[in-house]
Each structure stands twice: as C-alpha cells, then as structure tokens.
Amino acid sequence: MIGLAVIVGIAIGSPDMLFSRLSIYGFITGFSISSYSMIINDVYDIEIDKVNQPERPLPKQLISVNSALSLSLILLLIGLTSSLLISYYHIIITVIFSFLSWFYNIWGKKQGLIGNSIVASSMSVPFIFGGIITGNISLLVWSISLIAFLSGMGREIIKTIADVEGDQIKGVKSISIQFGSRNAMLIACIFIVSSIIVSFIPVYFDLIQIYYVPLLLLTDLILLYSVFIISKNYSKSESLKVKKLILYAMLFGLITFLANSMIVW
View 1 (cartoon, one colour):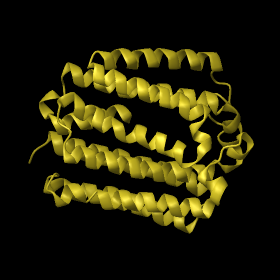
View 2 (tube, rainbow, N blue to C red; view 1 turned 180 degrees about the vertical axis):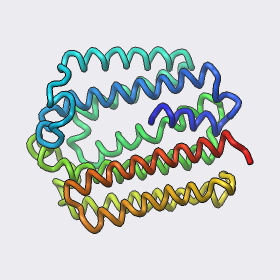
View 3 (cartoon, rainbow, N blue to C red; view 1 turned 135 degrees about the vertical axis):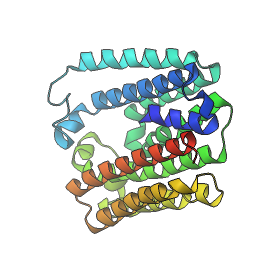
C-alpha cells in the first residue's frame, strides 16, 4: 500500500508522470522499504507474536529467521537503489525511514505514542515522497498525508489493545498498557474522527471532483463505523477486526484520490 501512496502523490502532482521511469522507481522504493520494515518488525516481534499472533510465518516456523533477514536485506538494497535513481533528496528520505524502521523496533515501539507516531509517519510521508518527484507538493497532497497520519495513529493505538498480552511480556509501554484499553480506545477514536474532519479540506477547497465526493464520504463512513464498533466493544477480537477495517478504508481512500487525479470528468 505504501508503493501505491507514492503513486498517488505523483498522480496529484503531475498526472503525466504517472507512467514515467521515476514513477516506477518511486513505487519500487515504497514497496521495497515497507516490505523490509514489516519483515524486520516480524523478526523483532517473534516472541510477542508467539502469544499475540501465533499463526504468522515466523512463530509458526514456516520461514527461518535467517531467511527473513536475508530477504529484508535484499529489499532494503532494492529500495535504496531505486530511490537513488530518483534523486539525492529521495535517497536521504529513504535512508532516514529505513533507519527509523530499525530504531522503532529496538526502542520506539516500547515508548507508546512515539512508536505509534513513527509508524503513522511511514504511512503519511510516501504521499509527500511522490509529490517531491513531480516538484509539486500541493495542498491536496498535504491533506491526504495528514489524513493518513491521523487514521494511522488511530489504527496503531487500536492494535495495542489487541497486543496487550504479548506486549506485557516484552515490556512494551503501549498506550493500552500505560492507560488501559478503554482510554486507548478513546484516544484512537479521537485520531480517527480527526482524520474524518481533515478529509473535508479537499472538498472545501474544491481539490476533488464532485463525482468522487460520494466515494470519499463512503471512506469516512467506514472509518466512522470502525469508531462505532470499537467504542461498543474494545476486546482483542474486535480490535483486530477494526484494525483491518481501517486498513480497508485507507486503501479505498487511496483508490479514490488516485482516480480523482487520473480520470477527469
């Protein structure tokens, strides 16, 4: 999804560049670095996942740790190379977020909101990354980036509700562990509702075609529904469902903004 976010940033900045060489490099960078980050996270979380998500490949021993690390290194090298082919600015951004991925796992994720902010930033910056490729970081790009950050924060905090048991074993100071699952749910809902409010900026400033407004509203309704569900029941099982629901909403929103930039009515 991160690779697609880069493409959205490019499509908004300059639709003519959408199928260019730089656009391909941007997608490869986003896809490779996000995949590298997820694998590194799985390696560091192997003991936690034995409790929270034992069905994942590493806890289930479907793949060895050495194989996972080798794959992550290959993906990292691909991401760094493709970003260098775009510009020096892009490789600097890529190096920073590659480092933050490692930093998040060894320290950040144990620090509550700091760790959540790192993950949410990795969801929002790709839009700006794409905008820089075109040389046009518009208000729409900044708006989508902020929406992604806020909804990402909400999703990450909801995830901590589901991960309490395993996080306690590893000494993770998540919002749920520090302040309780109910307070974590309330904080997550504030972030998600904030993202819904920010989503009206493109509508207010006529940055999105009128034909796509219903699709944007549908995305907001999905997010609002996730708030309704988690506020009624913030158990582990419901938290996992809502986490997926928010991800689907974010993906639907991505497609909406991409279509808005590519298809003019």
